[in-house]
Amino acid sequence: MPTTHDVTNQPPPLTSYDVAAYPALLESLRTHGAGWAEDGVRALGLLAGGAEAQEWARHVEEHPPVLRTHDRYGHRVDEVEFHPDWHELMRTAVAHGLHAAPWRSGTPGAHVARAAKLFVWGQTDAGHLCPVSMTYAAVPALRAAPDLAAAYEPLLASADYDFGLRPPTAKAGLVAGMSMTEKQGGSDVRANTTRAVPGGDGDGLYALTGHKWFTSAPMSDVFLTLAQAPGGLSCFLVPRVLPDGTRNAIRLMRLKDKLGNRSNASAEIEYEGAVGRLVGAEGAGVKTIIKMVNMTRLDCALATAGGMRLGVAQALHHARHRRAFGRRLADQPLMANVLADLAVEAEAATVASMRLAGAVDRGETGTADEQETLFRRIGLAVTKYWVCKRGPAHAAEALECLGGNGYVEESGMPRLYREAPLPSIWEGSGNVAALDALRAMARRPETVTAFFAEVDAAAGADARLDAAVVRLRKDLADVAAAEYRARHVVESMALVLQGALLHRHGDAAVADAFCAARLGGDGGLAFGTLPPGADTAAILARARPAGGAYGDA
Image 1: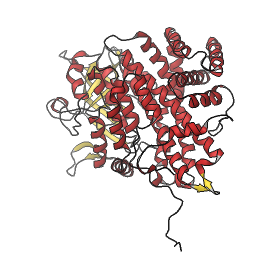
Image 2: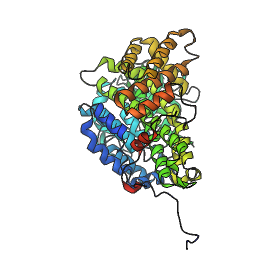
Image 3: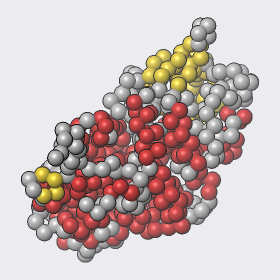
Image 4: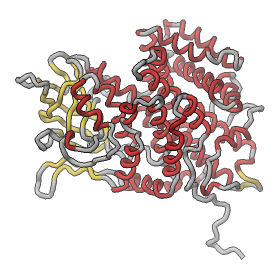
């Protein structure tokens, strides 16, 4: 006889599985020249799917960072304390090259390999990806000052995670942060009021005074920041510790109490004459730091795609082990439609994000491909907008697949749900990203040519895709209402790009379902509205998590 304490009809934990065993990711890895990295990606995938890393992620979510402004004697310390498992997550990420390592590699496909690892490892805890991403993104901006790049780039790319307060050049490895926005301007950084006063001896040092509203990763070793110099808004490298071992005048006022991203610290800070070194020319601050912003925008898309993949894996795992009304949830046609639709969305996001990582690779080599650079400029803007915009709805639907079980913290789905809006806000919210796409097309019309060259490579593969391309060309010709319709136009561009990439590099069943539902008018507005004829069985077989406790249920 069963007792009241018997547990039945509950799925086993999804643990000890290979997060990287995802066909869309591994196929993209090979397509874009990084097949050589598959063993390393798979090794990281096993770590990410293991019980230990999942416990690290749970701990850092439950024990967020704490600000200590003063020590017990009243001395100003401006320190952020983290749970020990935060450092384990960071140490693993750095050791596997998720930070600035590709910039020093020289191996074709290095940026693609790094993107795949970020996608995989981010499915543990997304919060620590913030300093990892900014360390990666700092390098192209820092190269505007060759002397600084020569000194700091090897340390930013080091495989050593060296946490603690010491002068940057005395450490085995560095982590970089960004300190850009202010309370009166937000994304309008030209409204910044922080002042930068040059020193009198011509050594390139400036004294910065002002308040920053959202400083990401305030425990970093160095920060790229914007301030108003005599020649206009400029970019500066600001170390947390000065060469003589004294603390720079960076005051942490408070940590943000955020919706998600709880494991990561975000702070309001004040510069009280903080020492910074000019990066690039005075007045070229936006031009310099936008190189960093663009790289973090790529990571926004990658992290969102990884979050989608995690949501699909959890939802499908639950549905294959949970029974209702006499059969497994996954075998019920409407649930299969929902799960397959979520899988299609995740795969489209993955394929597009990895394609853009490939464009970084080919656009940043010694023989840089100009067409790839142009495509990346426009493709990144539209993909960051659309993929990140879809993330919250995707997370909500994946959570709902678990029913009430998904609404409780122990499932991990609330953490995924809280995290989902951040990439759409970070580095330019939806409107900023959409308008940036229009700006790119207006200032560099050749980006439009590069975009359509990418899309036209799939011409003839699908009549619905071909018709959508025709409609898009007409929409782009309507310049009179361009700003008002920016979201519509950029959404159309993103969908056309995803459809083309799925047909060229993806799975036939996924590509067909995507074009039918997203481009052919046969789908609805909610997830779970794929039209009849979609091969949901093939899509779900492709989306299943592999190995570990998943089983064959």
